Image (tube, rainbow, N blue to C red; front, side):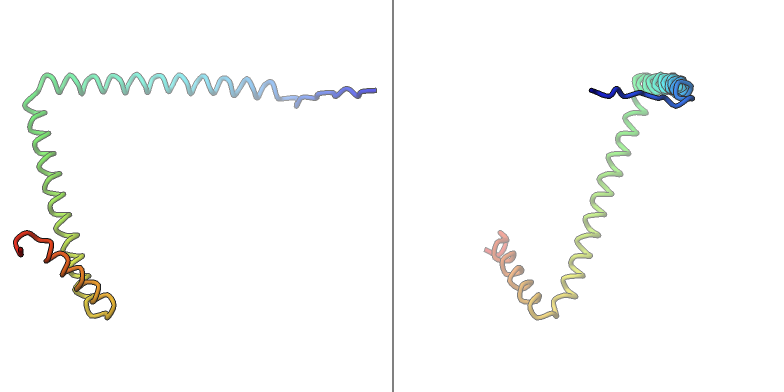
Length: 114
């Protein structure tokens, strides 16, 4: 004979499920309000860009200049730090030989030494 399983529920299970459903509905409503607010603010930004093209031009120009300057300065700093590091490592026997070989390869491949 097969035994039938009896299912017992926690006494407050239905109340807990209802509370969770209400909480989920509340969170969904808040999320809908946040989504609407974000869409409206994006629309305001688009309208400002179309109504003030000079402002957009100057902002983009300044952004481009700052990116270019930052890239140039960052590259100069990294290259100078690498050159300082290589000059400090040139006194170590194996590394100095490798650096000298790399220097010879670079000097040989540069167009102005041919």
